Image (tube, rainbow, N blue to C red):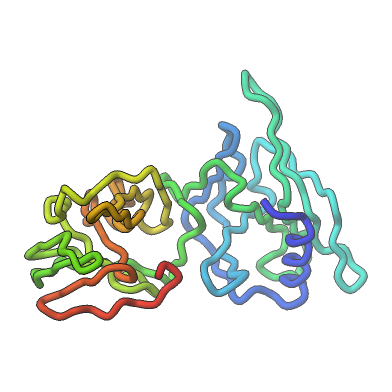
Length: 267
Protein backbone atom coordinates (compact mmCIF):
# COMPACT_ATOMS: atom_id res chain seq x y z
CA UNK A 1 0.00 0.00 0.00
CA UNK A 2 3.04 2.26 0.02
CA UNK A 3 5.46 3.31 2.74
CA UNK A 4 4.32 5.61 5.53
CA UNK A 5 6.76 8.32 4.40
CA UNK A 6 4.71 8.89 1.25
CA UNK A 7 1.62 9.58 3.33
CA UNK A 8 3.53 11.84 5.71
CA UNK A 9 4.67 13.89 2.71
CA UNK A 10 1.12 13.98 1.35
CA UNK A 11 -0.29 15.21 4.66
CA UNK A 12 2.41 17.85 5.02
CA UNK A 13 1.79 19.10 1.49
CA UNK A 14 -1.97 19.33 2.04
CA UNK A 15 -1.50 21.15 5.35
CA UNK A 16 1.03 23.62 3.97
CA UNK A 17 -0.34 24.19 0.46
CA UNK A 18 -3.89 22.84 0.48
CA UNK A 19 -5.46 20.55 -2.11
CA UNK A 20 -6.13 21.48 -5.71
CA UNK A 21 -9.81 21.63 -4.74
CA UNK A 22 -12.33 20.01 -2.42
CA UNK A 23 -16.04 19.32 -2.73
CA UNK A 24 -18.56 18.08 -0.20
CA UNK A 25 -20.25 14.76 -0.99
CA UNK A 26 -24.00 14.60 -0.41
CA UNK A 27 -24.28 10.92 -1.34
CA UNK A 28 -23.87 8.20 1.27
CA UNK A 29 -20.36 6.72 1.34
CA UNK A 30 -19.56 3.39 2.98
CA UNK A 31 -16.40 1.33 3.33
CA UNK A 32 -16.62 -2.39 4.09
CA UNK A 33 -13.49 -4.24 5.18
CA UNK A 34 -13.03 -7.65 6.75
CA UNK A 35 -16.81 -8.21 6.52
CA UNK A 36 -17.35 -5.08 8.63
CA UNK A 37 -18.75 -1.66 7.76
CA UNK A 38 -16.04 0.69 9.01
CA UNK A 39 -17.23 3.93 7.39
CA UNK A 40 -20.79 5.15 6.94
CA UNK A 41 -21.21 8.83 6.20
CA UNK A 42 -23.19 11.43 4.28
CA UNK A 43 -20.63 14.13 5.13
CA UNK A 44 -17.62 12.97 3.14
CA UNK A 45 -15.53 15.11 0.81
CA UNK A 46 -13.78 14.76 -2.51
CA UNK A 47 -10.21 16.00 -2.24
CA UNK A 48 -8.13 16.47 -5.38
CA UNK A 49 -4.58 15.58 -4.35
CA UNK A 50 -3.64 15.65 -8.05
CA UNK A 51 -5.40 16.47 -11.32
CA UNK A 52 -6.46 12.96 -12.38
CA UNK A 53 -9.30 12.12 -9.97
CA UNK A 54 -10.46 12.88 -6.41
CA UNK A 55 -9.85 10.90 -3.23
CA UNK A 56 -12.61 10.27 -0.69
CA UNK A 57 -12.07 11.77 2.77
CA UNK A 58 -14.49 11.01 5.61
CA UNK A 59 -15.16 12.59 9.03
CA UNK A 60 -13.33 10.84 11.85
CA UNK A 61 -16.61 10.66 13.75
CA UNK A 62 -18.08 8.48 10.97
CA UNK A 63 -15.48 5.74 11.32
CA UNK A 64 -17.52 2.85 12.77
CA UNK A 65 -16.78 -0.55 14.29
CA UNK A 66 -13.06 0.18 14.24
CA UNK A 67 -10.56 2.03 16.39
CA UNK A 68 -8.51 4.85 14.89
CA UNK A 69 -5.05 4.62 16.47
CA UNK A 70 -2.66 7.50 15.80
CA UNK A 71 0.89 6.20 15.25
CA UNK A 72 3.06 9.06 14.01
CA UNK A 73 2.11 12.68 14.60
CA UNK A 74 2.81 15.23 11.88
CA UNK A 75 3.86 18.72 12.93
CA UNK A 76 3.73 21.81 10.74
CA UNK A 77 4.86 25.19 12.07
CA UNK A 78 5.58 23.63 15.48
CA UNK A 79 2.01 22.36 15.87
CA UNK A 80 0.73 18.79 15.59
CA UNK A 81 -1.91 18.90 12.88
CA UNK A 82 -2.28 15.30 11.69
CA UNK A 83 -1.11 11.76 12.23
CA UNK A 84 -0.42 8.60 10.31
CA UNK A 85 -2.87 6.23 11.92
CA UNK A 86 -3.97 2.63 11.88
CA UNK A 87 -7.53 1.36 11.78
CA UNK A 88 -8.00 -1.66 14.01
CA UNK A 89 -11.09 -3.74 13.31
CA UNK A 90 -11.65 -5.97 16.34
CA UNK A 91 -12.38 -9.66 16.05
CA UNK A 92 -16.04 -10.56 16.25
CA UNK A 93 -18.02 -13.75 15.79
CA UNK A 94 -15.74 -15.97 13.65
CA UNK A 95 -13.94 -13.01 12.04
CA UNK A 96 -10.35 -12.33 13.06
CA UNK A 97 -8.97 -8.90 13.89
CA UNK A 98 -7.83 -6.85 10.91
CA UNK A 99 -5.73 -3.71 10.56
CA UNK A 100 -5.53 -1.00 7.91
CA UNK A 101 -2.26 0.94 7.81
CA UNK A 102 -1.29 4.34 6.39
CA UNK A 103 -4.50 6.09 7.32
CA UNK A 104 -4.07 9.88 7.39
CA UNK A 105 -5.94 11.49 10.30
CA UNK A 106 -6.18 15.28 10.19
CA UNK A 107 -6.77 16.78 13.63
CA UNK A 108 -9.56 19.18 14.46
CA UNK A 109 -8.03 22.52 13.49
CA UNK A 110 -9.85 25.47 11.95
CA UNK A 111 -6.75 26.37 9.92
CA UNK A 112 -7.11 23.08 8.01
CA UNK A 113 -10.42 24.14 6.50
CA UNK A 114 -12.24 21.24 4.82
CA UNK A 115 -9.59 18.77 6.05
CA UNK A 116 -10.26 19.46 9.73
CA UNK A 117 -11.05 16.23 11.62
CA UNK A 118 -11.13 14.25 8.37
CA UNK A 119 -9.65 10.84 7.63
CA UNK A 120 -8.07 9.57 4.44
CA UNK A 121 -8.12 5.79 3.98
CA UNK A 122 -6.16 4.39 1.05
CA UNK A 123 -8.83 3.25 -1.43
CA UNK A 124 -7.07 0.03 -2.43
CA UNK A 125 -6.60 -1.08 1.17
CA UNK A 126 -10.36 -1.53 1.63
CA UNK A 127 -12.29 -4.57 0.43
CA UNK A 128 -15.21 -2.57 -0.99
CA UNK A 129 -16.39 1.03 -1.16
CA UNK A 130 -19.97 2.05 -1.92
CA UNK A 131 -21.68 5.27 -2.96
CA UNK A 132 -25.28 4.78 -1.83
CA UNK A 133 -25.73 1.08 -2.71
CA UNK A 134 -23.52 0.98 -5.80
CA UNK A 135 -19.97 -0.40 -5.55
CA UNK A 136 -17.08 1.91 -6.48
CA UNK A 137 -14.20 0.41 -8.45
CA UNK A 138 -10.52 1.43 -8.61
CA UNK A 139 -10.94 4.97 -7.26
CA UNK A 140 -13.60 7.58 -6.58
CA UNK A 141 -15.50 8.85 -9.60
CA UNK A 142 -14.71 12.37 -10.71
CA UNK A 143 -17.98 14.37 -10.65
CA UNK A 144 -16.56 16.58 -13.41
CA UNK A 145 -16.00 13.62 -15.72
CA UNK A 146 -18.87 12.14 -17.70
CA UNK A 147 -19.61 9.19 -19.93
CA UNK A 148 -21.96 9.58 -22.91
CA UNK A 149 -23.04 6.56 -24.97
CA UNK A 150 -24.47 7.36 -28.39
CA UNK A 151 -26.02 4.93 -30.87
CA UNK A 152 -24.64 5.42 -34.38
CA UNK A 153 -25.76 3.91 -37.70
CA UNK A 154 -22.51 4.84 -39.42
CA UNK A 155 -21.05 1.55 -40.71
CA UNK A 156 -17.86 0.46 -38.99
CA UNK A 157 -15.06 -1.94 -39.88
CA UNK A 158 -12.11 -3.06 -37.75
CA UNK A 159 -8.84 -4.34 -39.20
CA UNK A 160 -6.01 -6.00 -37.30
CA UNK A 161 -2.68 -6.19 -39.09
CA UNK A 162 -4.49 -5.59 -42.39
CA UNK A 163 -7.15 -8.28 -41.83
CA UNK A 164 -10.81 -7.39 -41.35
CA UNK A 165 -11.92 -8.91 -38.06
CA UNK A 166 -15.21 -7.07 -37.45
CA UNK A 167 -17.91 -5.30 -39.47
CA UNK A 168 -21.19 -3.77 -38.35
CA UNK A 169 -23.86 -1.45 -39.70
CA UNK A 170 -24.13 0.30 -36.34
CA UNK A 171 -22.26 0.65 -33.07
CA UNK A 172 -22.36 2.35 -29.70
CA UNK A 173 -19.96 5.28 -29.36
CA UNK A 174 -18.73 5.78 -25.80
CA UNK A 175 -17.35 9.24 -25.10
CA UNK A 176 -15.51 9.54 -21.80
CA UNK A 177 -13.96 12.83 -20.75
CA UNK A 178 -10.26 12.90 -21.58
CA UNK A 179 -10.23 9.65 -23.58
CA UNK A 180 -10.70 8.85 -27.28
CA UNK A 181 -14.12 7.74 -28.47
CA UNK A 182 -14.54 4.00 -28.03
CA UNK A 183 -16.62 1.99 -30.50
CA UNK A 184 -18.64 -0.91 -29.09
CA UNK A 185 -19.92 -3.53 -31.52
CA UNK A 186 -22.17 -6.59 -31.17
CA UNK A 187 -20.15 -9.73 -30.47
CA UNK A 188 -21.73 -11.29 -33.57
CA UNK A 189 -20.05 -8.60 -35.70
CA UNK A 190 -16.62 -10.09 -34.94
CA UNK A 191 -15.09 -12.99 -36.87
CA UNK A 192 -15.41 -15.76 -34.29
CA UNK A 193 -12.49 -17.72 -35.75
CA UNK A 194 -9.98 -15.10 -34.58
CA UNK A 195 -11.48 -14.45 -31.14
CA UNK A 196 -9.97 -16.24 -28.14
CA UNK A 197 -10.78 -15.71 -24.47
CA UNK A 198 -8.16 -14.10 -22.24
CA UNK A 199 -7.92 -14.59 -18.46
CA UNK A 200 -7.22 -10.88 -17.97
CA UNK A 201 -9.66 -8.68 -16.04
CA UNK A 202 -9.63 -4.96 -15.32
CA UNK A 203 -11.89 -2.52 -13.51
CA UNK A 204 -13.07 0.98 -14.32
CA UNK A 205 -14.92 3.26 -11.87
CA UNK A 206 -17.26 4.45 -14.64
CA UNK A 207 -17.95 1.20 -16.48
CA UNK A 208 -17.31 -1.74 -14.13
CA UNK A 209 -15.30 -4.94 -14.59
CA UNK A 210 -14.01 -5.74 -18.08
CA UNK A 211 -13.12 -9.11 -19.55
CA UNK A 212 -10.84 -9.55 -22.56
CA UNK A 213 -10.28 -11.44 -25.79
CA UNK A 214 -7.09 -12.07 -27.71
CA UNK A 215 -7.09 -11.87 -31.50
CA UNK A 216 -5.22 -14.67 -33.29
CA UNK A 217 -4.44 -14.24 -37.01
CA UNK A 218 -2.24 -16.67 -38.95
CA UNK A 219 -0.74 -17.98 -35.74
CA UNK A 220 0.10 -14.52 -34.39
CA UNK A 221 -1.57 -13.50 -31.12
CA UNK A 222 -2.57 -9.92 -30.40
CA UNK A 223 -3.12 -10.07 -26.67
CA UNK A 224 -6.04 -8.40 -24.88
CA UNK A 225 -6.97 -6.35 -27.93
CA UNK A 226 -10.70 -6.61 -27.28
CA UNK A 227 -12.68 -6.02 -24.11
CA UNK A 228 -16.30 -6.16 -22.99
CA UNK A 229 -18.45 -5.64 -19.90
CA UNK A 230 -20.89 -8.41 -19.08
CA UNK A 231 -22.36 -6.44 -16.18
CA UNK A 232 -21.44 -2.77 -16.56
CA UNK A 233 -22.40 -0.04 -14.14
CA UNK A 234 -25.86 1.46 -14.53
CA UNK A 235 -24.52 4.55 -16.31
CA UNK A 236 -22.84 2.33 -18.92
CA UNK A 237 -25.60 -0.27 -19.29
CA UNK A 238 -25.93 0.42 -23.03
CA UNK A 239 -22.60 -1.31 -23.75
CA UNK A 240 -23.41 -4.54 -21.91
CA UNK A 241 -21.91 -7.55 -23.71
CA UNK A 242 -20.73 -5.41 -26.63
CA UNK A 243 -17.08 -5.62 -27.65
CA UNK A 244 -14.55 -2.85 -28.13
CA UNK A 245 -11.11 -2.73 -29.77
CA UNK A 246 -8.17 -0.57 -28.75
CA UNK A 247 -8.29 2.26 -31.31
CA UNK A 248 -4.58 2.74 -30.60
CA UNK A 249 -3.68 -0.73 -31.92
CA UNK A 250 -6.11 -1.43 -34.77
CA UNK A 251 -7.43 0.29 -37.88
CA UNK A 252 -10.99 1.54 -37.50
CA UNK A 253 -12.87 2.55 -40.63
CA UNK A 254 -15.95 4.58 -39.74
CA UNK A 255 -18.41 5.42 -42.51
CA UNK A 256 -15.69 4.70 -45.07
CA UNK A 257 -13.06 6.91 -43.42
CA UNK A 258 -9.95 5.50 -41.76
CA UNK A 259 -9.69 6.92 -38.25
CA UNK A 260 -6.42 8.27 -36.92
CA UNK A 261 -5.00 6.10 -34.16
CA UNK A 262 -5.09 8.07 -30.90
CA UNK A 263 -1.90 8.47 -28.88
CA UNK A 264 -2.56 7.40 -25.30
CA UNK A 265 -0.86 5.35 -22.59
CA UNK A 266 -2.56 2.28 -24.11
CA UNK A 267 -0.79 2.67 -27.47
